Amino acid sequence: MFEVGFTEIVLIFGLALIVLGPQKLPKLASQIGRWVGRARAMARQLREQLDQEVNFEDTRPHTPTSVAAPPPAPASPETSPDSNPDLQAPHERPGQ
Image 1 (cartoon, rainbow, N blue to C red):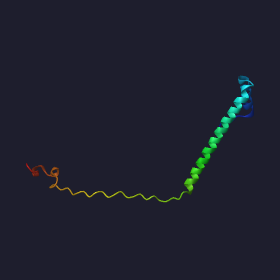
Image 2 (cartoon, rainbow, N blue to C red; image 1 turned 180 degrees about the vertical axis):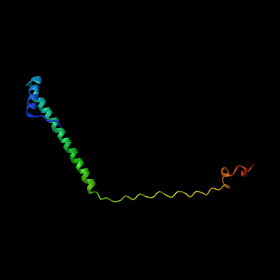
Image 3 (cartoon, helix red, strand yellow; image 1 turned 90 degrees about the vertical axis):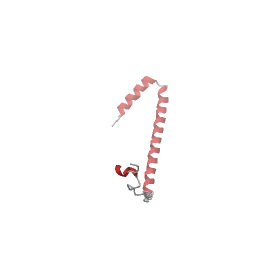
Image 4 (tube, helix red, strand yellow; image 1 turned 45 degrees about the vertical axis):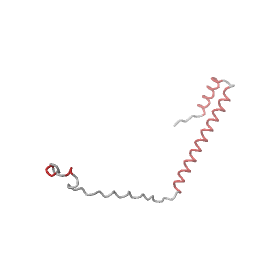
């Protein structure tokens, strides 16, 4: 992917020495080293946590979860044309 060889490192170090000077370069190098160390520690923590989660899922017993059946629908009264005036034919409606 992105490879940096020895000559590239020497070139970068030489440019940094010229640009920053001999007083600032050691301080900057130590600060970069701390940042890299923190980034590695966080990556290691994340990897360990993911491994723990995967192992937890693997060791957890797989019990089938029973889903309760939905309650039965209430019995609806059978609709007959006699009980519902909207279902009656126009000539059979009361009051006509």
